[in-house]
Amino acid sequence: MHIFVLGTGMIGTTVVTELAKYAGVKTITAVDINQASIDKCLAIANDPQVIGKVAALATEADIAEVLKGADLAIGCLPHSLSLPAIKAAISSKCHLVDLVGSHFPEKLALHEQAQQAGVLIVPGCGVAPGITNFLAAQGIELLDEAQEAMLACGGIPRYPDPPLGYQVVYRLESLLGLYTKPATIIRNGKIVELAPLSDLVEMTFSEPVGLCETVITDAHSTAFMLQGKVENLVERTVRYPGHWDKMRVLSELGFLDETPVAVEDTVISPKLFAQKVLIPKMSGHSIEDITVLRVEVSGIKHGVSTKHTWEMIDLYDHERNITSMAKTTAIPALLISQWITTKKITETGVIPIEGLIVQERFHPFLTELSQLGIEIEYKEETFVEKE
Image 1 (cartoon, rainbow, N blue to C red):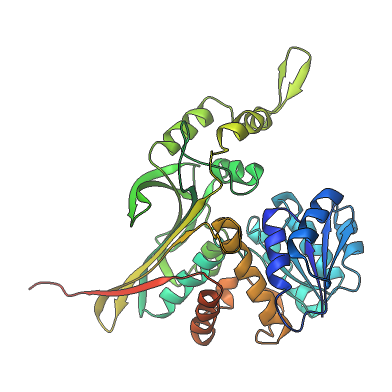
Image 2 (cartoon, one colour; image 1 turned 90 degrees about the horizontal axis):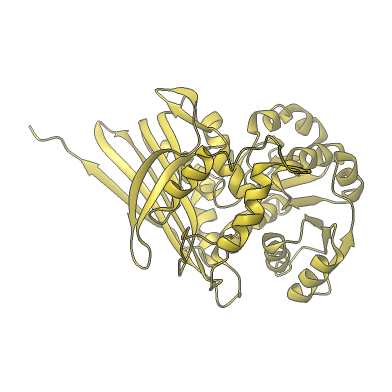
């Protein structure tokens, strides 16, 4: 079994390192455009079955050339390369587990092509999108009538620094995309879009997190996959108090716009300028982070109001020496990859994780997540109306 990992940044390197621990993987090829990044990845993995490959990854043709001879690939690339990577995987007849969940309708349109090629494409397979998706899907399955689904997740610093109380735990490009993209949700059974940074709501987690604030962000594939199964569904992103108000001011002032502006003799996108300015403001004094997750699904079961809640508070992994965000994003992807290679999953087409890890696969997958250090707590509540 020959697996390619596309991109050797923080999360790609974690995927490579953890994947190398599995029996049955003959060769892992770590691919990047940057030799220094590959060298760092190989040094951390420190495994003879991992090899590096410098290659262009700018276009579908570039990626298809890379994937010749691959059985399966894991995409750890920027959002802009996700759709080209999927098309390249289909043309190369290579299974692909992709961390990126954006542009789901365009990806779903490739479902029949992937089936004809005999491959499985799993988009949005990390923590959020990813873990949150299949928890919500399972919660809906457990109810006779699902009314509300709320998916909340956020990567936050263990020791927040002013002024934003946030540190970059993945690409700032992807982060600002989250902040500026309209949010797709389900409302009264219909898919609708909300403005970015909508509906600020407080949410409290147990120590060491405490009080946080959330806004609605894009629900990616869940809005499309779970429509017709739940009346209302939203996804929320979690930050410490005050962060969202400051980002909203930047947005309202136009600093997150993409339309270029002229500054003397230079033409530059305000969003690109903001990225350069914000990076040092989002680099904390400590690399330790926390990933918080809460999924609540409520409705009716046997005539009784019922709510299913899953919650995770995951800290920086000192044993692996990796961030919580890298761990909780990488491990679901490599587990799905392993399940494909061992034929625990045999479907083909474009199917996000909520279409795969439900019902009889749900508890075994949670068990394997737990064995790899991702602990998710579960609670069921029933509410009997007073007469």
